[in-house]
Image (cartoon, rainbow, N blue to C red):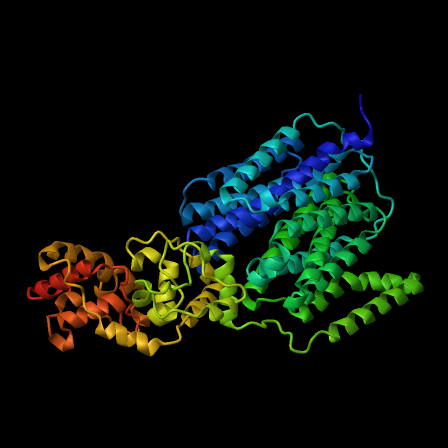
Length: 624
């Protein structure tokens, strides 16, 4: 039985959904999260993402040459197989070189799958309601990716889901249900190919810039993608907008693109004002789904292409120029500016709207009047926004506090010096409960796997904090803290450093006097002091900065306020460094320098370290 048109189109909808799910949950989230875990710096990250773009552009433009050489199913299976292999590889340990190759495979696989799918989609949807099938597949994909358990899953789990989706896509391509001739035809093309290409490029550029900004701005991310309710609402908006787009596209493709650019542009304007992030979170998914359905439907059914070769060529150019190049430009705007300039929103809107307006002026006077009235109302609302709102209303310290919260630092670090305990000497003066409760929200924490950070700005310099965030084990030998180097690919890392450096206690002078009066306890007895242990402690805790071949010295020596001395060459009493003074420096560091304290070392360990330093220095040292 041939079945109804709706049932015959389910396979086309499923293939669209599989392609979008892979792109959304893996290429946009899991892959980037995996790179962040590797500690890639800004240059390396850009190089890897450039490899993905090169793969996508190259295969998108190459596929039209191959459309007549291989069957539709074989082409789709090749694309899904390459995408799935990349997802599987990402679930294994890998370095930057392999990550670059995987990135190219992701782009190449998506280029093959997307162009092949659009070129032959009418084979899978049939002639009855094909655009509705595209809308259903697109909306379903966005809905699935916004399910909280999927959206918040680990990169490994998201990669596994992406691989399974690719397997499903491969299975769906066997035994096509329709013939090439059983396809719909469009009597009048309402949107020329050049207009469509320019419009899609503007839309993808806007979308990518807004996406990057939301993803890398904690306050905006919290207002749009944080919490189950937000995610469910986003999923429903995506699904609804996709189905509306599918209903309108067959007769009014220009209207769908116009609504998409207006929704995205309005969302970008609202994102300039953090107090308006909630309405922005409603317009953004609507705009994305409106144009995402058109991005698939236009080259397949609405461009006027009469042959397979023509459809493949138009799809290749749209996905290469608008999809990959437009996306790269949008991400670059988000990285460099941190916001979407209103002037660019206006330009992108004009690219899509001007042709529509010209048609309306000629044929639909009343519609023009309604549109002008809407624009006037929008302008008045924009002008009525609070005058003190700005693109970056927060200080670096305030933004850094949001990074501290969003990265979950509270899970391992407290900000509470416990009264009447050793905390007071190690971490600083006790804060009053009134001071703690005044914070929004309080960050005292309930676990302490790492040191307390209540007054870390008094104990660690900004340079030390930055170096430790990038490579914790280089400064703290036994640290289990992961690298947060990815935060320094944009301003989040510097903002976090500014916040941590701002954490200072109320009575620093009194605490410095306590440190100056401290001496290692003699309760353990001199017989417990171990010179060999001191040598091991020096190698673990000190050599990284105080040896010319130490890891921290090699990376940061040009930025040290004062060059760290060769500790192994010191002699007791030399340059004022008595054994007692050396012990105080090891324990508490030197204020206003990059020399940190080692508060967690026991008195016996400090005595052992000082014993090795003072005795070993009497012999020539290879690095002195």
